Length: 345
Image (cartoon, rainbow, N blue to C red; front, side, top):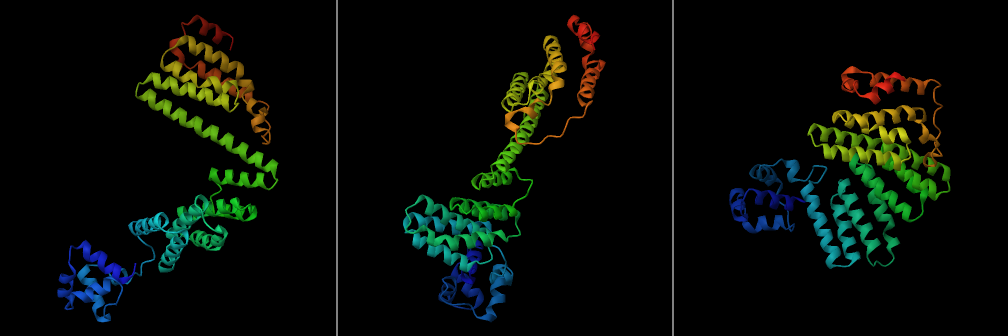
């Protein structure tokens, strides 16, 4: 923001007219008007009095701060949008270029205006859209240097998509270095580049890792929502989430154990003895196939660790100890079917 714009902004915030400001500073109202319109600048001896009058620092008055406010960025974006709606792409481009020359330190503005330019040349009718490549990529690259992680990520994603459209996959892959390796979206974007560049096995592996991670995350979410429903004593909703979790396990080919195990807790809460007995029997019979998902074609490119020889046996013993826990299943001890099951264990 230039000094004139700053004076106008803070003068209006204080509900002060140009005449009032001029009187307080000992100048004429036309002088204040010229400052605010950028036709002239205040005398250097007036800078401190102006700052004191407007209750701002000299740094603010002289626009020394490094970043625009969110409101200032919204205003510039609104003006740019108006240019695209009512003027040619070239005129909007000239406006954007001037704004970025005016505010060279705002990485967020650089990213947002570059994204606007990029989007309008994709969806609009622009002559020789490639002539704007250099400017747009330079803006994205400028935003990559931001100290703000969110801006860096958004700029990297935008630049990645630009290079992807141009089939410059090596450049697109470089953008991923600006993203956290823990971000699943980074892995998806990497997998896409793998596929585009003929690294098919790596692409499959990356996608399958995402599938397995997504199953685990969504399953935990359903379980958390189920617990909320139980806490609220909304058993209809609790049953709904349990069935969704079972369907999720089936969709991701996790195997029978995962498809039925979620029903046990709900059956215990509802004291549903038949479902408890059914579920316990199925869990005990399917625990030995708990790693069936490792043989699914969905995960055919993943290398799983070899199962420990006694792992399945340990899991089965843990299940048996759980079923024999008086605190959890004591109410089942008179159930004939449960007694027979316990006797076999």
